[in-house]
Length: 402
Image (tube, rainbow, N blue to C red):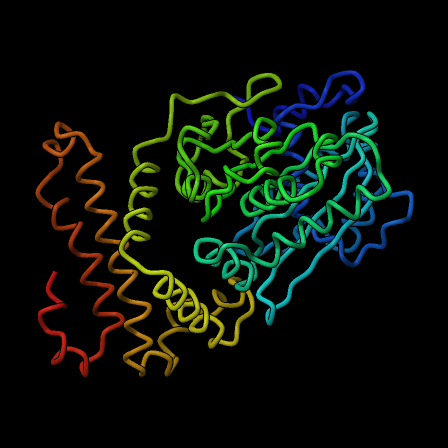
């Protein structure tokens, strides 16, 4: 089955004025929004992808270090798109990149002009920065995060001067930002929005279904998730998801390069895979058992731990080895900090295996070897040994037995 690279080979010879914009085009532009353009001046009239390619590759080369999270396939996709008839004359009109560790915000957006009289605003998802991931975690704790407000303000600023039709989209966190921006702007701007694409992005903590702004754009939203999604199922209702087939599992299913394409659309799946359902229900169980304060303490403590290594990105954290970094810390000498990180982690693991027992069919369970039962227990013991110290054992001896 084909993917977005194959799509460019098939449809890349037709301009948007010849073959209308589709959902696969949306994902391609959202992937191109991952490119770091902050050291490339954008002319007032914009720069087309065919011209941008040479400038970008001269500065970054073919093998730019995208970090642990992003895929080198982004560079290859960029080159393929820039050399195609369909995307070569697409212009980058605006680019914003903002990372603020103090304000706990990671925000980036690229404004594309398609050449058919419309624009596509692509919000970037989470990058390699630790602060970017903390903001993602905060989405599961807070009612709103700074990047969402930035997304709204950017859309408003674009529409002050541009009065035409536009589409909005994003991958991962960028998908969430696209919905937030679209539901937060004026009705006049909303009327000009053609579609809002959320590509495997998380939903919202609070119910936004009753907000008037959301009601006005609800029918324009497309929530696309791979069948093995672990991100797009977060805080989203299953009935609102457009599930597509994917040739990869787990986190590798998230990046979009293995989503199956047939013609000008993604191949639909029958529904979410069992593993995705288990993960989603386990997180729901975790939320039901933790208060707002406990969730916030867990997030703050976990990321304080990561920042205390001196790393700002996961690439830096991995250069020495994540576990080696953490073992060298005095961070866990404080038993209260250990508890704030360990207890929710243990609860999530318990919920995961509890849910697995409810979701996996009995006939499948019967086929599992006895060692599989032990495998369920081992991760819990390993985590406890890694985080709990001798001074805890005497006080919590009963709690360490799983």
